[in-house]
Structures are given as C-alpha cells and as structure tokens.
Length: 174
Image: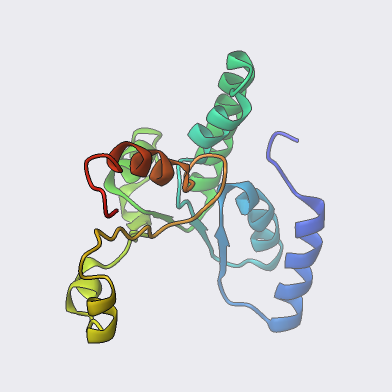
C-alpha cells in the first residue's frame, strides 16, 4: 500500500501498546513509521519517528542496483512516505544536519526535528585506558579499528577490506 502499513508489525505493536500502557511511541526506521502512526492515532499517543538514514536514497540504491528505473520509482515512493510520516510525527530524529535540512526543505518544521548522531564518541576512545599487555603485543603493528554495522549491501566491511588491500603494500604491518 502507498502508506506502507505492515500488518504483522501493526498487530505486534498494537498488543505491546495495549499491554504496557505506553505513553510515547518511538519508531525506528521509516519502514515502520506509517505502521506506528496508525497505532499512535488509535491510542492518541505522541510518536517519535527515528530516521537514522536517508531511507529513500537507500531504497533507490538497493532497488536500482540492476534496474535504474525501479530504483528511481522506489525513491520517489519512499520520499512521499517520508514526507507524510515526518509531517504526522510529533518529533523526528535524524543523525546529521543535512538530513534535517532535507526534511525542512520538504516543509517539515525545524523545531520538531532533533539531531542525535549515531557515531562513535571519539572522546571516549581518546580517554580510554589501554592495557600495557595489549600495547606490547601490537607495538610493531599498524592497527585499524572498524566501528560500524557490517552487512553486504551498503555499509559493510567490504569497504574496509578493499582499503586494506590497497594499503598492504604501503603499510606492511597492517
């Protein structure tokens, strides 16, 4: 359907809200926000829509991998859903200024959008205590740390592996 109601999730969320007397509904991922809105409307609950990625662009990339036109249509559909959901939600969470700006250009009021980055807090890494035993073990190596989600589609470890393949001749101990 145009507004993307997932009947299975609708049933599960409905039962959860009913059983636990929820005060606010926080829905993570545009894919389920329409479903969450249907439940929020039924129970007169405020809804927080958590858009931690540009889902329309993601759908364009995934659906258009082998068929450009299919990807373009998917993006257009999800952009309509995103605009509707952001307009109807009481609050919207994005992870970066550019995402907020993109929604504001669609007519979403800036004051209802919060930016909460989903990146690593570098200060925690900078102030972390390093074990002397670990430091000694790897003192002659060049170490990299990958912090992120690993999957095979769009934000996976394949980028790191390709980078290491390019760096191994320059940095022998990588």
